[in-house]
Length: 447
Image (cartoon, rainbow, N blue to C red):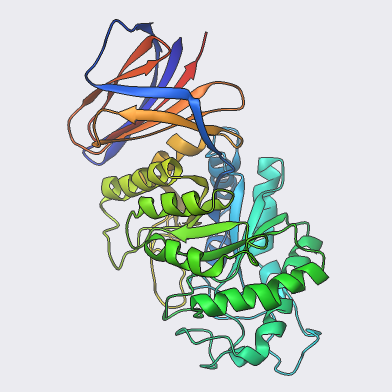
């Protein structure tokens, strides 16, 4: 058995990445420092990785010169890039936009005659098409709404929460379907739709609250019937789309025998902590439902932009944890931002794996970009998670069998000291060192 070991370490503010080829040796009873790989135990199939194509990201990309634009696209979608195949996109405005907007603001237009996605045609859709051109195929898109138009809401504005007025449940369902249809007319491969982004939060930006009963009623009596009328039921519906700590109780409240066939899965974010066990319980109760990570970022209101190692570890720990507890996909938040962490119409600035300095014309790859790549470059769509056990929780580990029958194991060291590892598989050992403040991916070719 041969292993290609791709490893990154971060010392004194600099990242260094190298490859080495390691030949296995016979396992003669190694007990300590082992990570066992168990390919006979299989779990969920991976659908892929991606980033969110917000208006902020698209606008920032349009500010680049042609050479830097291509450098960015190659870094995400090119042959040697992150290998992204998925994307999330907002229905109307979110905080990562140049301002609030809706695709139809005319109260009384029950037939949506004034509906238009012209705003998206300025920056967002050209950005998507450029990415797909480099990728050589269409991206699989998830759509999520942040807020209905102001006239449909109890607070009469896009921001600060509020609720969807009951009299507009039907109109909003038609609006969401119309958005899907318009995107498809523009040759966008819309595969997934969430009912509402962060329905349990009143944000200073675009937001709308649903309790569990309201989300269930809107889904069951309005959104799904509208999708059925418009022949859109092949679009997968996801509930919750919020933090993991309440994902289980929302799932239990929304999914019953009547709604079970309508809901494809549960989308979740990371902002309230790990709560990986919640994913286990959802999977136990609803084994057929997909678990999809749909958003996470390093918020400057809570974390430092300068601490690249901690920020990158946040990605590595959460990706490994989500995958090990059943997630089928991981979609990052803004795929690109400017050096300030915007633009953002309410100054909710945050980090992104790639950031562009408009004044200097410099595109920066953060350490989080490299950490994501240790997963997304090697864990290909169609890969199946396999069983594993590890000798210490100081190393985050996840492992998959790829469609090409190679095994890929990602190991992230959460300490400053080098950590020895014996990868054990089918009577063979591969001796590795995961460096302090480092991450590595072992690609194993079975003989």
